[in-house]
Image (cartoon, rainbow, N blue to C red; front, side, top):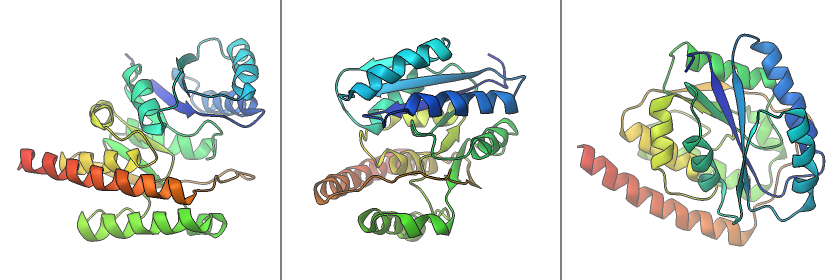
Length: 244
């Protein structure tokens, strides 16, 4: 294992048409930035039902034959897909983001460089304040609630726990694999467990690519996330007691 290697985990569920072109272009841009590093894509299909996956994956296999494609027949959520991907990673460092690569290649590169420099066990992306101007109201309220919660209850100074771009070393990977949340809030559980185990966590400003479309979060989805939040808090409390 070379210390300069890193894997990129991409959970995928019902991607938009043309997703494979974005993945190929972003991957090639990244390898251009790191010509001396081995960068492997780990794509986890989380029970996709749209034909966009079938059409796109055939092209992607032709363009990037070394990418690892993992098929999960059942849709179980982002958290489950990330754990599946992380369990197959053999690199010194891992990053994960969304299949549409919503952040610039420069943003991914900056997080990879911080990890390689040993700045932290986990590096989390921090979106600019301008990001929230185009976010649907339910998602905005949820994000701000998490921010206040992390600051007031856990003393974490990061204002953005849910940014979909994070990186970690082997210690961070072990924490991610210990998470149990299957849905959106796996990011929150990941950070709370890491903080409880006193891993070094740092943040890096990231930039969104132009033209990114945000998904809407309905009432039913919000209700499920609130249930997930309660479960996460209970589990993290137990972990903190065990470590005390």
